[in-house]
Length: 382
Image 1 (cartoon, rainbow, N blue to C red):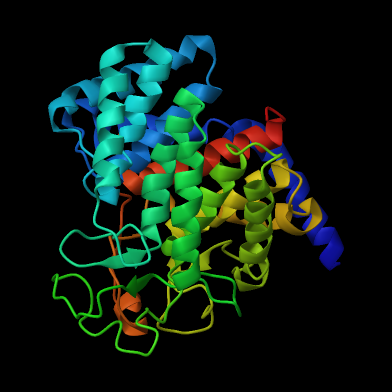
Image 2 (image 1 turned 90 degrees about the vertical axis):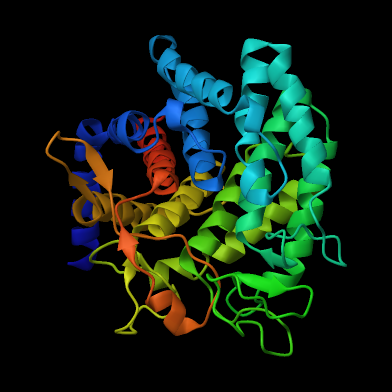
């Protein structure tokens, strides 16, 4: 009976795919028109994640549809051109738009700005192990940093073909991994305190690093989502002949190994703190659900992850997100919600007490990227 129900679920999913395959268009349009219009673009991490989703939409779109995404990216980058910088990891990510336009339009002003951002990036404060600090006013390594710098460095590699950008990424990836990865779960904790000082930033919980390792104790869902999405994108960027590709492949396998057993089979979601799905104080969180599934889809596409194991997991996530974490407003816009607000570092109770909301720009971007990958995987346009 269980096998039959799984087969029936997959059959229904395949039949619904055609109807649902434009979900990424609908959510992207909501982001473009309402949540993050290009003329009000801000040079920050949240807008940068949404920007990255539109670069992905552009690359997969038909010639007739590319103009929508190209116009957004160009308007956003022109609007912020004078203010564009790479002085923090959260600023670096938007630089991917400059690198993308330099490649797409061949306009030298975008290339110049993309190079300036790289120079800024090289001067971000580092820890003693040369890891890029997530913050400028205290020295800490966060898992978020890997995504924010990685998306820009990958785009610079696509623009120039210069391997130094991939080497730079791998250096930071391995430095952060050495401090944040947990060998039991093969997930990453949120952060490590590099300067051995408690710092009151009005966001993190005071004393989060008061332990012998000076690192946080919890595996935050979206934090691990950043790492998994970055690994997935790296695997599509690095040459397969690279030894780094094999290392990243192994990490994707390890990081996804426990996720199927931690998923809620009814709702398809993972939790704010994924390893405690039965804790009554925990809650299901939509952005990490989309992020984990995004990485699994790319893992299956690259024939790294087993389809028989992971395809039902991703199907549950996709239809669960549609049912429980996407709503329509009065204008019929599809709005992702149940997204944890911007989050710093704390203890278990700190994460449990974070609020969920309609998706900010970053959440919209995450939903766009996941649904786009799901559409491509299911209609064979990989």
